[in-house]
Image (cartoon, rainbow, N blue to C red; front, side, top):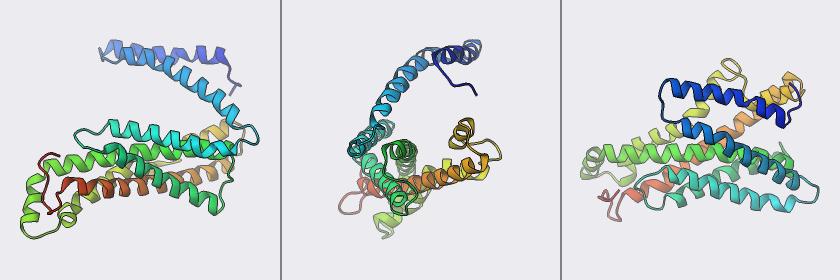
Length: 253
C-alpha cells in the first residue's frame, strides 16, 4: 500500500460516490448524511492526528489520564443518548464504561502486556472505550425494553413472593448477552470471514503476519474483557431503578 497523502484521500472519495449512488438509486433517505459524513470524518481525524502527534511527544505521559477521562465522558454521553425514558442513564453508562475500561487497561499494564506510554495506551484505550460504549448502550436498551415488554411477568413474580433481583434475573442475563454478542460473534469468525482491523493495519504497515496475528489476539481478549465487565455492570447499575424501595415495579419506567 502506498504511503497515503491528501491526494490519495481525494482519490478515495470515489468510494463515497459509490455509496451515494446506491442510496440515490434505491431512494434511501441518507444521502445527506453520507455527503456530510466524510467531511466530518476528515475534520475530526485530521484534528485527532495533530493532537496525537502532540500527545506522543516524550514527557507527556501525565496527559494520558485526563485524555482517557474525556474519551470516557464522550463515550458515555453517546451511549446514554441512545437510551430513552430512563433517568440517570448517563451515570450508568459513565460508571460502567469507566470501570470496565479501567479493569481491562489496568490488567494489561500490571501483567505487563503494555507499557504506560501515550503512543500505546491512548490508541488501545480508544478501542476499549468504543467497544465498551457500544456494549453499554446495547445492554441498557435491551434490559429496559425487556422489562417494559414483560412487565406482567415481572409483576407476577413479585406477587408470588420473589424479590426484585430474582424477578428480573432472566432479563438481566439476556441483556448482558446482548451487550457481548458482537465480540462473541467476532471470535467465532475472526481470521476466517475477514482479517480484523489491528491485524490488517499491521500487515499493511509491513509487520510479519504472525506478529500481527498475535497482537490481534491480545486486542480481541482485551475487547472481550471490556465488553463483558461493562455489560454486567450496566445491568447491575440499571436494574434497581426499575423497582421501588418496597420491591414494586415502578410505573414511570
